Each structure stands twice: as C-alpha cells, then as structure tokens.
Amino acid sequence: MDSTDTIFAPATAAGRAGVAVVRLSGPGVRTAMRALGIVEPPPRRLRRAVFHVKSTGEIIDDGLVAFFPAPRSYTGEDIAEFHVHGGRAVMAAMLEALSRVPGLRLAEPGEFTRRAFLNGKLDLAAAEGIADLVAAETAAQRRQALRQLGGELGRLTESWRDRLIRSLARLEAAIDFPEEDLPAELERTVRAEAAALADEIGRHLADAHRGEILREGLSVAIVGPPNVGKSSLLNALARREAAIVSATAGTTRDIIELHLDLGGWPLVLADTAGIRATDDPVEAEGVRRAKTRAKTADLKLVVVEAGAAEAQLAELGAIAEKDAVIVANKSDLGDFSKLPSEAIAISATTGAGLASLIERLQQEAEKRLAGGAAAPLVTRARHRAALEEAVSALRRAEGAQEAELVAEDLRLAARALGRVAGRVDVEDLLDIIFREFCIGK
Ligand code: GDP
Image (cartoon, rainbow, N blue to C red; front, side, top):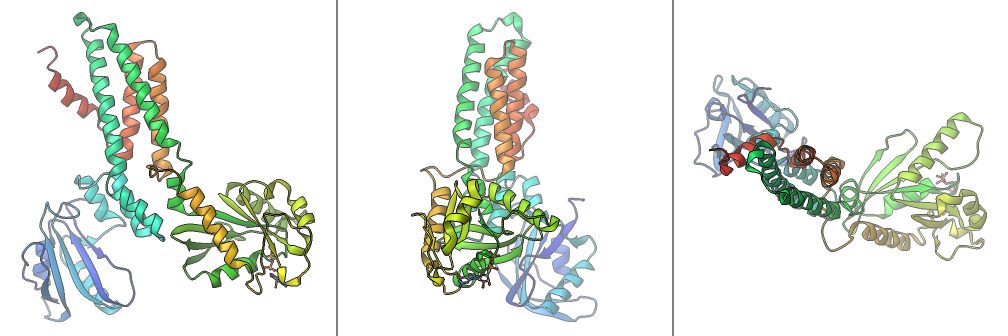
C-alpha cells in the first residue's frame, strides 16, 4: 500500500438518500478535481460543482465540493469531498470516473483513518474511538466512543509512559556512567515510582470491565428448559421494544441474537437451546452451547413455566443462581406453582408482565454499566492486555535486585503502555531525553 496513492471512497452508506458524499485523500486530489471539470474551491468552503467526465463532456451530477488542503485535514493530506445526489447510478458513475483518473484508487477499509494515524492526526486509541462511534447503537456507547475519540486514554497512557521514561533515563545514566557514582538513593526512588505507577494503572483496571461491556453490549442469555417460551419471549421483546437495533444470527447455528437499546444501555439478548438431559447428539450439542453461553453471559434470563417453576428451577440448579433474573412465563394459564419471590411473572403470548421485565432488565444494565463516579478508560481487550502487561513489568521492577533488571522491566512497561496509543518508539524518546541530560559532554 503506497501512501502516495490518492484514495477515494463513498463516505456515506450505500442506497438511496438525499445526499451522498465521496471522499478523496492524497496528492492527486487537485488532479482529480480538474479531471472532473471542477474549479478548485477556496479551502474549507462548500461550493457548487457540476461534475462531468472531461473526455466526453457528460455530466455526472450537479452537486457541491469542499477542499481541505494538507495539512489541515482529517488525514493530514489534501482532501476533497464531493457531495452528490444519493442514488446508486450517480455514485456508480462518480466512482467509475474517479477510477479512470491516473494515480487514483479505491480506498481500503479504514484507510482514511489509517492515514490520519500515520500522519499523527490522532493516536491509535482515538482511531478506535472513531470506529466505535460509527458502530455505536445506543447513547451510552456514543458517549463512551466520543470520550475515547477525544484522546483521553491516549493522553493518560502517554503521560504514564513519559513518567516511566524519565525514571528510566535517570537509572540508565547511573548504569552507563558508574564513575559518576549516582546515589543508591536513586534506585530506591525509581522502584518507588514504579510501584506508584503500577498502583495507579491498577486502579483503572479495577473497573469491572465496564468499558468493554458497554462497547460490546451487555450480554444477556435467555436460558431454561425446552418449551417454556424462550423464543416466544425473544420475539415478544422484539415486537414490544421499539428501540430494537438489529436481530442477527449468532455465532452458533442455534443461538439467535437481538440487540436492544434500553434507556441508552446496549443489550445483546441471545436465545439458546432448551436445557435438559438428552441422548440425541445434536440436541446435546445445543445444550452444551446453551450452558456455555449461560456461563459467559453477563446476565441470564432464566425462563421457566409459572405452573412448574419450582421443579424446573431445581433442575437448572446453579444456572439459575448467580447473575440471573427468574422469569415465570405462561402466567396466562393461571396455574402458579410456588414462585420464588424474586421471579417476574409474564406471558409472552399476551404481553402481561413484559413491561416489568423490561424495566428490570434496564435496571440490571444500569447497575453493571453505569458504575462508579469515574468513567472507565479501558474499552477493549487490547487496552487491558497492554495495561496488565505494564503493571506486571512494573511489579517486577519494584522487586528486582539489579539496576539493569529494573531498567529492563521499566523499558518493557513503557513499551506496553506505548502500544495503547500506538507509539513504540521508546528508544527515540530516550535519545531525546539523554540529549537533554548532556551527560558526558
Ligand atoms: P422455547 O422452546 O422455550 O423457545 O419455547 P417456545 O417459545 O417455542 O414456546 C413453546 C410453546 O409454548 C409454544 O407452543 C408457545 O406458543 C407456547 N407459549 C410460549 N409462551 C407462552 C405463554 O406466555 N402462554 C402460553 N399459553 N403459551 C405460551
């Protein structure tokens, strides 16, 4: 992939719409505008443009153009946006005309943001924030993505890395210039700093995975014996809940997923196979998957029949015990066995009790996602892995005997932290800091 290529792609979704936008980035943007017969507009102003194929004179569309000269653009390169009417034929003609301009090619997925990252317009964590914002389905997800896009995570990890590299530089100086006899005090200070930083990062990691769960949606598994109305409940919720985002087939053939927006909180509801003892190998596989899903879910909707609740719950055992909301379905049959006090009686058929169930689900989501005062910082497993690695390197540094080993662990911690924002050039930074020190000169 040559970064001197000029790339173009539709910036709006496919299909009919009032307006569609094509975005171009790279050194050939001016050439492309000329090729489509457009006069270069003043920077960052929207101007009318009649796009046409230069060679034949055929008009593609009558629209608008905006030009963002480098470096003040999203990617840091020259960017143009062509606003045209949002029709399939218009977009097809536009893409066709652009692909005929020498030096232009269709962009790869994410390539605009990739260039923005490579040109230092945003760090890796912020780039992930953009992806999350585009994928956000609920208000809480949108807010979290915006925060990350704002660079909070990147700034914090960079400030930690900066602190670390300063300690490291002092320590390396002591190692490299032993004749200067830097005090043993220094090693103690560096160890204490490592410990303090490990504590600080550790506090951010102790967030009950709220950021990651919010990004993915709270995973809720509908579990229970066969024929109690699990699918009916999923369908009833699908019909009832106006803010359904999407229904997709799950990762396994027999698990159906439904994305819900409950008061801004995202839920991913999964219907699973009925749990019972069986000799049928196909069914047994379904049961195994259902149990796995129940284990990994953040919350379980345990569905039983109102008339047989006691026996069915006993049969389900541990599944119905932790992180579970007990739902007694078929309440319309009017045949109540001894219901546990916390059970919510509903009828998937008549809709009775569904409102209470939805309310309860929303409370459960809020309990797990709203959390404490501070917004969680970690939104992806990638961030968590890097921060955990940094913490364990810092803990090792804290306890290491030799100054060289302390330095090595600090370097590993700095590298792990640098990965969050996408910076791995610890050595470069050391160079800069060493120059600042003027040691030996
Ligand atoms: P699943 O196997 O647990 O997914 O159960 P289904 O949703 O397929 O439902 C099993 C049977 O129970 C079907 O015949 C449904 O029509 C019926 N059923 C589901 N919910 C209710 C309910 O609330 N009341 C009554 N009377 N029947 C229901």
